Length: 511
Image 1 (cartoon, rainbow, N blue to C red):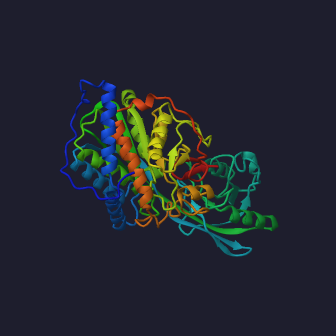
Image 2: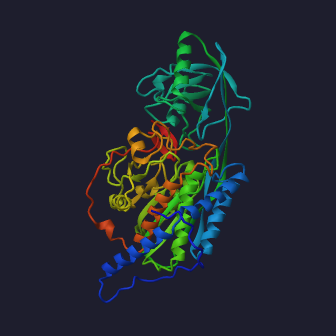
Image 3: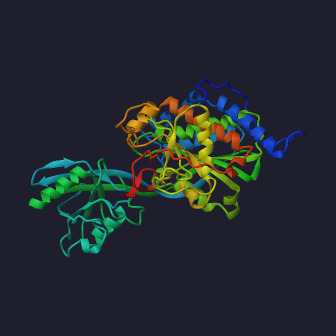
């Protein structure tokens, strides 16, 4: 486990190229394992949650002075990226910005009010990439789409003339939000309101800026069912305002790698640096970013000369749909993809009501998505063994596609990592195992204004920094564990987050 004591400052050292030393009494494989064990122990001992917390304080300070967030395409993210870049440069890494274009979105209005028969206000969330109403919104009658297994997904769901100029009320399920609003638009609807088919608010995406056809927002199941019941007794007239800024902007991933090490055996670890616009994103994902930065600094100070190239990434525009990692993977050559032997992802590693989740590389839990590429099972096992040796409880979590491992998995790169939970609800068994409160979200401030410096659990933070440190130290010298068979052991894991298909972290596109 990562120590909580502050590490002593050491003079930054350039990471020089070297092959693993081979003593006459050791085979190359034995020497690699010896070097890996030594470096892993050193990094775990030196990497400090207390020191990493200082980076979180910097991210909070940046958010406080840049409008309260660090979203991609804004000054807050630019300042965060510059801070990470400068820190890594100081410690002798080859550091670069990987620039890409994307569509920045910022909701400017999301209002829904029933005017008749019984006036009331309803909370509504604008879908990402929605079209906008005029300023002040529109007033129109509501029209409910008949409920079935694929509500609002087919043209036949919209009786001719019934929806012209009206706002379509559509239940979630059966197809993407984008498909629902497009079908409503084709039927002449002036807007769409999609209500949840499970408890909780509904915040989703239409997929991309080209998909949006009409102003579209999401509401709770309870409010949707009440509106449908009201419609069953007579007309319902509403005031509906959804406005969203959508603008092409430029942003940067930060990529840093050791100056030495065999590029043909590149070990890669990443975390996303951007926040949502709702808050400063200190747990999501300042925590993973700070943990990665702390271990990178300790690797530089260790005087080690890794046999393998170690590459770190701080992704941008993850919250817009994994855009930074997708852009990076897309520009890799065939050789570049082959050289990356593994990718480990660390997103939300200090949730206040945490679970200690390890990505289920072999799908032993049988939850959601299938297994990761060959080697993913070994990455899961290696993390589990590290935690087991320290008596630290853990369980699996599904590859939901909600974070930056997604693009790596798609091109066949073994992937893994850890996660401490988002908006999912902690179970009674998990409360017994990890502590905390059952029946409450792992992170009640997920994607919210309250995801501040006070939204961090230092114990979970330290555990996961230890995981990062052990992985860096081990794989910097020795990749042999990726070839060792895995004994499949189910862990009763779950997603650690809300269900559904996603285009990115928390951006649901369907049920």
